[in-house]
Length: 337
Image 1: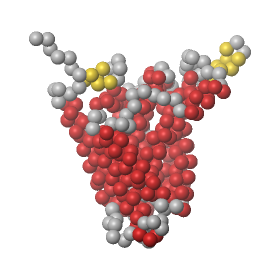
Image 2 (image 1 turned 180 degrees about the vertical axis):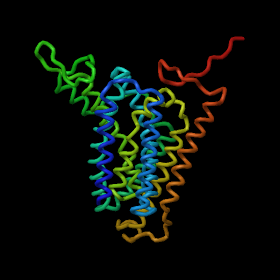
Image 3 (image 1 turned 120 degrees about the vertical axis):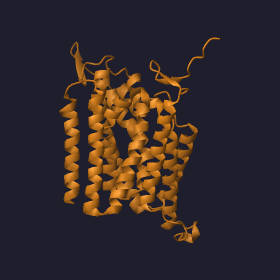
Image 4 (image 1 turned 30 degrees about the vertical axis):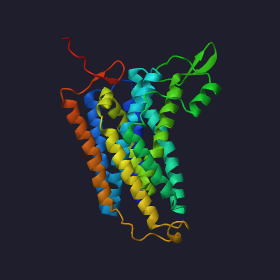
């Protein structure tokens, strides 16, 4: 219990420092600043895993590492959409870090609620793993086929409602959320962007949260995995920038991870089966159990392999170049004969 309280306190300090100390001055982070932040949070995640190993044993520690790597990988994929959102709302470059900080904080709160609800459902209705597993396998197939990619941003219902009930200006005014014109108070587009980043990330959580519940049932590990995955995400956004489209094999790696966890969830559901139309409502004993360490190996191999293959692809002479004006890949023009 003390370990959990101290963990939450330290993570809260991380977010407060990021929002009110580092983020107090609107600016575009330098490459050095981004690398330092990312390395710091990765090291902190590894330190946390080591402390979990020391205080709770190897199994929870490996579950955290598996969950953190999965969430981090899926969060990197989310950056594609963040790029589109920033462009769609014409967010000034020097305000994007601040926008991401607030948006990710909102996302974290929403994810926390989602995790609590998910944990309660999983504890009471074990058959829900069948649904989670089938959904993840379906998502894995979509990602592998490229059907999950969407180059356009679509406002969700909450954003459309917000536009109808509030007065929003067309221009930004620094970090101000509200401004006054001719005695009338208006919200700046900053409000819309905050809510958009937060709710869009929650939409992605419909994939990632069931995935991590396939690796661990402990809400504490689920939540801390999400926090460490979101920490440093904004610096990763600036560091990768236009290189996101160069990670051509990342979707393949993610599809393998999602598919593997989906199968693992279904196998676990069969182990604790209580549905009357499956094996007469009895657990299916012959189904093998996938150990935690194997999950970690598969995740590292899939994501690491996808990243390595993408780097090799980038170094090839015939690799497509990035059109920075459109943020899409274009083929190299052929030479005239």
